[in-house]
Amino acid sequence: MTSIPSKITLQVPAKINPQIRVGPLREDGYHDITLAYQAISLFDTLTISQNPEGPTMNVTGMDSDRVPADNRNLVIKAASLLGKHVDVEPTFHFELAKCIPSEAGLGGGSADAAAALVGCNMLWGSKVNDDDLMELGAQIGEDVPFFIRGMMAIGLGHKQPLVSLEVTGHKWIWVLAIPFRGLSTKAVFQEHDEVLTGSLSEEEEKYRRRRQGCIDVAWGTSSPMELLPFLVNDLEFPSTRLLPDIGIALEAGRSHGAVASLMSGSGSTCAFLAKDEAHAMQLKTELQKETIFREIVIASGPVEGVRVIQN
Image (cartoon, rainbow, N blue to C red; front, side):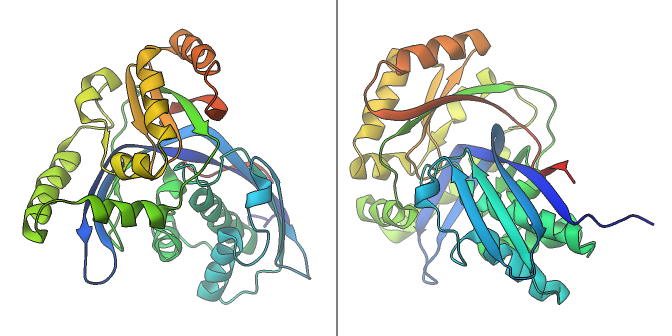
């Protein structure tokens, strides 16, 4: 009989989106969206322990002053949702150590929610399988299901199942440069809608072509250099209109020799693809001379999703 731990520590990665395709706003208030996911080696750490007074929470590390430590946090929302699913009260204390910056397009909040789902499931011994955890995660946020398994996947939009991808060992090395200001995802999508120039039918047709193009790319089995023409983010233009530093940052990456320059998610992190570790270090050194970044880190992918590092 397997014993159930009373405390568990989990590590969960950030994500990069090598491609994002966005359609026009639908009548239900959501956008059609198709995107490629890649989990990368920048990690938050979540420790969950028994606490009769719970749920309680403490947040430390990167941007901890921007992250609520109450029921607004997706960690506590995830624990409560799973608790309702298995009919258990989430009497836990959560210690969240942040390395993934907030409002940066790297999925930190969603990653933390995924860690909470996996950790609480183990502490309760409730044996909810990964597919069901992913379905629960989708009720919290579209990105949450991806972090359960990580590696690479295709997201097909609101309430659509995630498509896991075969991964054959190609390594992507990214230099992540985070501007001082973040961006609201809601504001970016609103700006996206304002800059559309075609009719609704024209925009829908453009999106259908772009969507299929994203789905057809062999993201997990091709080398990064083969995929350079497909690295594109439809949210980059509206995000740059809201925060011009993004445009300056992307140009800085190109001028300093990045293989590709790409905004991550809805911003504001700019991801620069490097040829290898030495090139990444050189690129980081050059970017540190710029004055628009508050943090520059090197990360690689793909990596696995939530994993237990101590129990």
